[in-house]
Image (cartoon, rainbow, N blue to C red; front, side, top):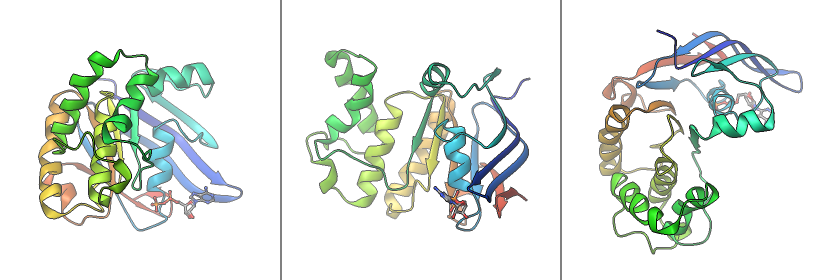
Length: 216
Ligand code: ADP
């Protein structure tokens, strides 16, 4: 079976600093992967490359059997299947509902259809009843969950999470841990960067250890 996503001889340099060097890395569909390693080891760089937001200095990526071409049209099409949730997400100073609807609006979805999807996404992240609240006035953990709902509502095939539970309390983490396998069952592949010592195993995820920009 062909991998869902594969990286071949990927390198990323910032000026002359080699931030990432990955010879071969394959991801299977409907699985959870955890990138684990110290600060600065290249986790975010790898996530941004896989999210097609950062062009590698060198190397090739194959997504769903298709070689990634770093040209606007091709990237726009492929990005429809991929969503990255940042550790400190940027939320508009508007309602939670507005924030979650944003991506749907950009895709031209009618507002009647949005309603049901937004409700479902809020339900998934345990923020039922938060739709009218001002997003920036929520706690850090709640804002992370709004960002997650904003990603989920787009139904990506590949969900990328940068330190998703870093600001969450225990109850939210438990809910989050319960949610990921459901998303996988629904067809998603998930790659998360995490500092949590036990969460990757709790999720039965495949652990990818990194150090100094390399896989170890
Ligand atoms: P992690 O997510 O594991 O903390 P990063 O991918 O953010 O690691 O960083 C990997 C390396 O690349 C670090 O040495 C970091 O300082 C460097 N780096 C990251 N982003 C930039 C940037 N925009 N410009 C210059 N160096 C960067």
